[in-house]
Length: 298
Image 1 (cartoon, rainbow, N blue to C red):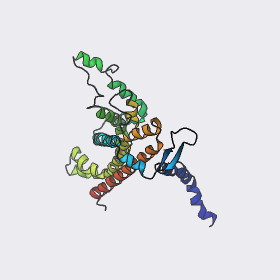
Image 2 (tube, rainbow, N blue to C red):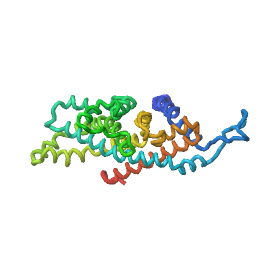
Image 3 (cartoon, one colour):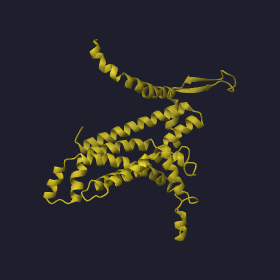
Image 4 (cartoon, rainbow, N blue to C red):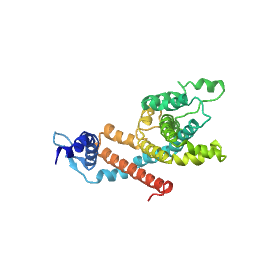
């Protein structure tokens, strides 16, 4: 093979090596570890009493039969069912408002809406956590002046919405920027023709802008679904502040707890593979459904 033909392979070699080293290899090792386990001989004393052995599908059967694992999955699905419509709905609303001809101070508004996305998740979670706590919340004196008691935002009935609020606050700005950028790339002649036909700004937004930015909505929706199913940082940071958030509140929290608190890397690896398969299957099904309904693709 000539040197000229080797140039493309040399160009992609560093990216390929990094992909294999930091992505493919860890996934393969996790899948391998999910089929392993510890065999204890006798009382488990001595240097050779505990050894790693092949256990087949035992870790998977234990994970699939673990009610606590499935409770965390259902809790995450409920979390996403609330967060996704609100976050994407607000992102679309803000993008349409900023793209309106009547909008003022759009540069300041874009920065203000996007700014929460630039705040690290740990800091934003701590910020909201202290706002939720009645003992340190600045809203507590306001409730006291009104003769009301500040609601417990970490109760069993509200904790899911409190955690979701952190994600909504941080994710709306990013999705808004993606949708707004898509709106700005649309031809202005379409809007002018619609105005000449007597369409109002609301009709233009609902009947022209929203259908034309549907690919951007699908993209933001897909990425938001994946990020929601991997929620970890927000409940983990809030967990010391709320008794209602357990160490296994979400699937990733349970995986982390099994791996580092219980020191059971093999069960954690099996659970991680199951979660990855669930995310891949749900994302693929959602993308196929949207493509079929919105774009007419099979």
